[in-house]
Image 1: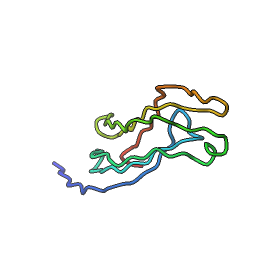
Image 2: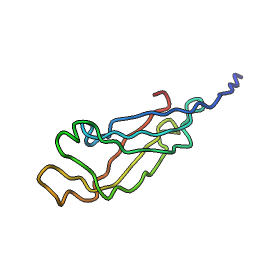
Image 3: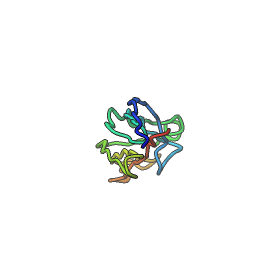
Length: 105
């Protein structure tokens, strides 16, 4: 029987937001032990240069909400907010901003 002992590694990663990857990204810190993610924390929602250049922004941002899926191999981060585009001061409400982080990233 092979019994392995895994050390825990803390990672800080930035991943493109899935719905608007050209405009936003999400950065988070998480721990990896073997092939399992845990302790997701300290996330930040980031605007990329193109968002500034094209006047896209987010207001009323709530979150993050963390979840671990895929037998612990994937961690998810989700924010919800109002997305604004150039010339649209009212924006689109309740937009979900989501990405996934993988244990081997």
